[in-house]
Length: 311
Length: 302
Image 1 (cartoon, rainbow over the protein chains, first blue to last red):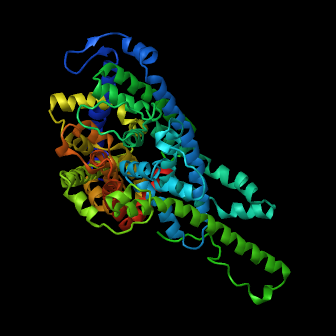
Image 2 (image 1 turned 60 degrees about the horizontal axis):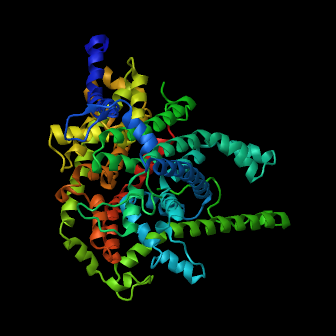
Image 3 (image 1 turned 90 degrees about the vertical axis):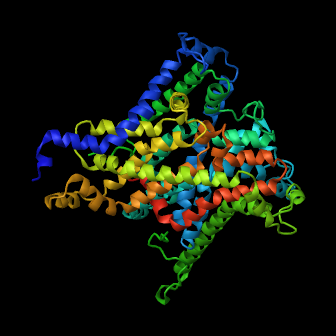
């Protein structure tokens, strides 16, 4: 055996060597800023003068006085619940459909998958156009069949559901994940269930569902974490739908219409990079972090596929 | 992409002569109806998925006034809209910046992810499980959580705000998502290959380059594609670091300002939108397999 394998010290050094890019990255671009975020959350800091310690004042400000925190948190949680639930149901249905298709499977798979690849900004701009109330193709078509279409992104009641539509259009990744999971269910189990006289529903309930539960769990948890960071689509939809010319120095109220598309990440940006209220922005970041971490912990505990091949 | 059939006939197969009779006919009728039902639903859903692209394209070649009218079909085809988009000041710079961000970002990510993923998948060492947990935690962390201190460092210590470097440089130090994905892939490479290379006197680094990298090509292709698209699609990053300097904008970031500058020209905006989508979709058609494999890997092969 080579020297490198028998000598534990050298082996440890070798491991460190291979891991070094990540070790540096983790400390500099993750651990440090995370600690700094906690530090700044107790500071008053406008990014010009030196930070000064203010105790819990940023925290009480965010939770008790910041006018937009309530709507932003409500919108974020609304999106987390509705979007994740509908995405999982819709993604699973599409996965089931695609496994039943015999002719043209490649075509259908591609058609369902492609929208997922559309850059979020481009997809959002396109959707604001398609759904625009006056002259958008969707309302034109609805009008042709005698339905007067809603105001979509321009009405506080339908702005969030419009964002949900946009996200369901990009369901391709979940569809592929569910499709792979469904194809992995052993065929013998279906045959056995058929012999027992199981119908389509019973087969799904007693064979398919137990086999894919870990993947459903995975989809829910990653969906929650992703939706906690929901930013680009909400911001762009609000800006484009409002029709405001966004030049330098122009101040627009985020979350058009009526804060209905304002999310917590947008508020972080506004506080940190427009109002230069670093402390409040860091508090908001930590609220996001706490929720995302709680969900991640849940994932680890349930062993839903992420770490199962560990050893 | 290969066509998946679940061991069933691809179309309503003709019933062999021997099986004639009312029961066989019923079974056959049922199968035909099932085939028709599934495919009708699939066609309807596929239409819903594809129509947005069709409308965006049709609008992109309309005249200025028709694009505002709500018409679905262009009266005349104005291909010059695309030329006009390219001639918009800054548009070509946005392409260059997007390509630089996505190209360098992908290169850095791949180079740094390979050794880390290899160590996490194949080395036995204390703290291996903890390291994996930490990788996954970083993957789960919303970027907004750490963005403020990071911005302050890049802007105040390194004076790199107004450029894309604060987004590109960290990718040379490992991207959690790519490390995780590649590690999942490397787990599927049998130990024996690596062991026999070592018996032949290969060092760990040479084993990685000569044995593991060639075998892991599909996994590496998948992380490269995902990273390229991540950078291409990124809006938040360029908004943080490049917003104040239009010369550093990327296509994804510039598109929205393009819309506000051409606030009434939906045709131009839709042409620009398609131009932002085009590279992603073209690459997809060349690399479908790597993609689908990558997506599957994230969810399934734990």
